Length: 271
Image 1 (tube, helix red, strand yellow):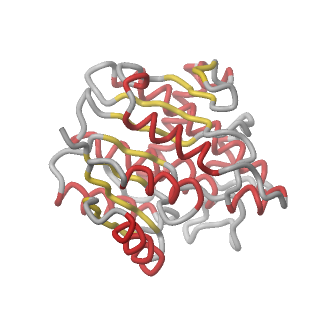
Image 2 (image 1 turned 90 degrees about the horizontal axis):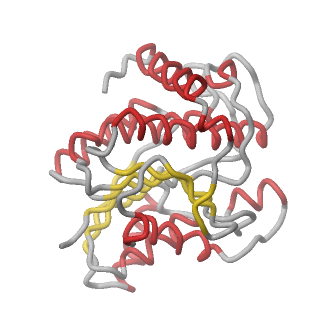
Image 3 (image 1 turned 90 degrees about the vertical axis):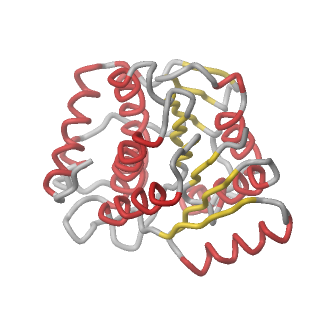
């Protein structure tokens, strides 16, 4: 039976490599990107390589939470079921670190947008589905002040905190929803892969992006990732691993969920 897979951040880096691998399989692939032009180029490229692929495209700027809501609404209007949500999109270095309403872009794109998109798509996902969240080996204890836009962080600090935050809410939402909901899994695709973010951060070409794309495809489709929820897969060791201790701290995870929900409320967003 075909799966319907939504992949965010499909126009660059690990996302594009993952899109190529998923397009080669017999599923329905929904591609998200921020740029309509780049998204069209990706679609045309995939259709040339994989003429039988079933593809659809959705444009949204994930730094704008209202566009995240619209993205979810557009997906639900066309598809009654989403089998897999791959929250891959992320940013490291940005020209302006603040959104129009004063939040840190790194937290909005890397943490809040995937949380909102996941929550919004839960009505069209069931216990056979999967939500795969892109985490990182670079994780640092979260400042709620920074999440709320009240503390300015460097690029590397904001990135590391936002990646711990997505891991934390993955674990907490999995616990809150239980087994009668899609599995929620956080994945470190591997350190120092040759993505644009790694080049920006370290000036390094990095390792083969296929290392990360392969594990995301496995997480989306393979049996080894079925019937597990609230877990962390570390592709640096190629196995399930203990997450950062804060992801196992219910108090800290609940405080994060509460803070994110308050940001949604302030932004006039109801899920």
